[in-house]
Length: 479
Ligand code: GDP
Image 1 (tube, protein in one colour):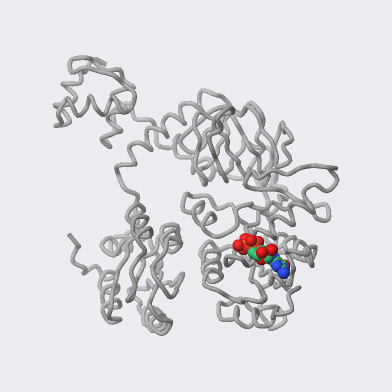
Image 2 (tube, helix red, strand yellow):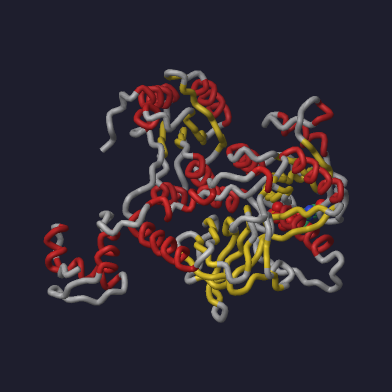
């Protein structure tokens, strides 16, 4: 207590005017000779990335701690699978989500109108399945980049009249990078031009081999538009879910992830949360991302109010101070005081962290990351102008081995480096190689924001040499 703005400015080697401006930005109006409250000093310290003495213990504000708490095996019970639908544009993702929603959600509930809240649940043979209602791998990987791994099963939709297309391959690689099992839904089989066998043939190239051909990937021929074979698809989902033995403890305080969030003019911040562990109750104090609050109202996709929501249930909640972001984690607390202090600590931390970048793998820090044992494999994404170059690069990179560490190529493609590539690189901590291609302007901006290392080359030897050198720790730092 008692330090004035001028005194703090001197300590920080800054102009008082700059501090006054900073304080104003965080909502504190002060003059040079005014002494500041502890809170204001902490906020200011956070702004400059300095840890003030009153620093809150990191462990309470790190939500991962709550997610990684020990589980009581005896309390675990089966929970519904969470499914994401991915695939190339126009192959029928939205149609499949709509048909399932329309035919299954309202069953047993006459006239029930479903609303889009970002996820919904259906029932099949007395078991529930949760679908994330935003098709595509962009949402999937954005959530993953923010630490939310909510998807248990990925459905890759491939139109039987079109076959495997670039975004089909992207979707497969995004699912594989997240280690999520894949079910292939060969769609539009009602069309005369449909050729499901060709789709199967094409997918073998990506390691998706049907059981009939000795592989272990489940293929289901469907027509999303005409509701053909959807029951079989659901059965296959239940089958894969059973093998995974998906379980959660419904008795503990809730943990979850935000699927969608927005600010409503009359209701305030609204978020759809997928509960992952425990049960969320109306009135529960919660921290969500860097915001907090108390659950005021919970509704499901049918607009029906709920008092409780258990594992794998999607619910729309109100009662938060500000709108969180998709992928943010939710943690429920016993008492409001703890929720508030954790929430406030996280808010401050987030402000400070905006200044100090996250730890991304770049060629410059590759060697030290390997040395510290942080990395066991080096994830790489290759984009090139022609398929031949992709293959030549991939096979050369696969041969690199430095002290037991190898390269893992998580995605390849022909064409410019796009935003989806950058999202995948950020989520998987990968290095991006562009061979005779460049990033699109949007991808460039996104890569800068996410600190994804993009290396552009025109000669294969240079790519290999650069990566090998970096892995051995002999790369001159780039200035
Ligand atoms: P998305 O971009 O993957 O979400 O694809 P949409 O669901 O928007 O579907 C693209 C187009 O394909 C639409 O005109 C759909 O009506 C059509 N479509 C989707 N599924 C089927 C199907 O099973 N059979 C036929 N014939 N058309 C379909």
